[in-house]
Length: 457
Ligand code: TRP
Image (tube, rainbow, N blue to C red; front, side, top):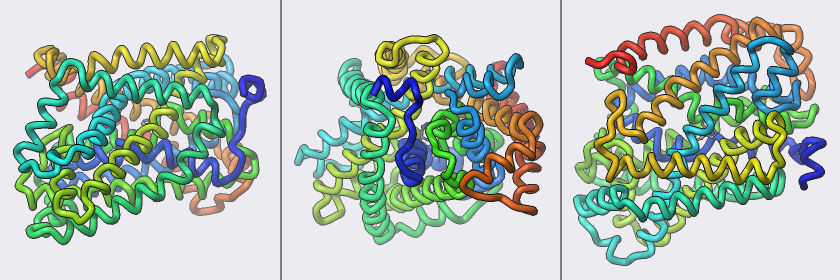
């Protein structure tokens, strides 16, 4: 495998890229983070703004990343060095590597929670707890100084191990088979959730917008989450694009991955919010929302224990296919730019990220009074990476494709394996040249003010 690496591995089929890119996109972002932030920012209005950002910014940036990756055949950092030698564009890649670091540190913590819930699910008594006790056991678990670390470390070891095994074997094989099964389980959960007494309130919360409840902070988070959920803004899809064959249709890949990712998030929302209202849980509970809500739903299902075990196993695997794509960004950078051996790079990156993750995890418990910019370490890393680094990265990626790379080369690169003609091509170019950068810039500046990151009020 190491040999194959130096000549750059490739995805074996067109489906390989879609499976791996969807495996990267679909993860905790859809099933854990989307419901929790939708709850925090007031429901449907947030959802609609999020969908707008997905279409107008997410989709074009995704296509841009795939183009940059396939054209350059390099990691996120090397790609810009190759396509725009001697220019500062390469620093976009550095943002990406930094973002990858921060994201994976807290991502590993939440994935660890998911592993813990596999074990909770195996425990019969867990299935007879009241909603209050379910919430209570979540709180005492994440505040524990040791247990969450154990599961986080297990998760990070798995992630590192798969990255060492390699691109094709490691990534494709798992995502292809397992993601469809996860989708089926979520649909079963949806059916149970919407038939709970009182479910209507939840559906109304999710789909009936009340824009007066939407804050500017909500708009910024919707933008940040569009990037987070689609795995954009830090070079994951540049790196994956670099493994793609010339005959792959990049346009249809981007559309399919975006559609699948959005569908899973909405289906996760449909599983959560009816239950939130049926069990009288506060929708703005925060990071614990799915862990405090879903166990109640499983209790109300025939075979609930089995579904619960399966759900958390598959959620962990969905997190794993995303985590490997995040780690891959750091590893490809260490290996190709810092000339480390791939295995050494993987071990080093995994170890450093795990350490930072340990601090995130402890910030739920013993370090909870360490508050920086009004947030604990976990929230701060999530906020800086998703709402600041990714949108900035995305803005520069769009600017790069729009102004530096240019329409002519876009047309050439897309023509390999697909096409984008006339009107749609022009819409794409306007989006990446003007609309996406300006929108990101405005949201971002407003967000800085309102989020009090630099000013304390
Ligand atoms: N999109 C993944 C999720 O929703 C997380 C993720 C994977 C990611 N790769 C990324 C986020 C790159 C931002 C950038 O869970």
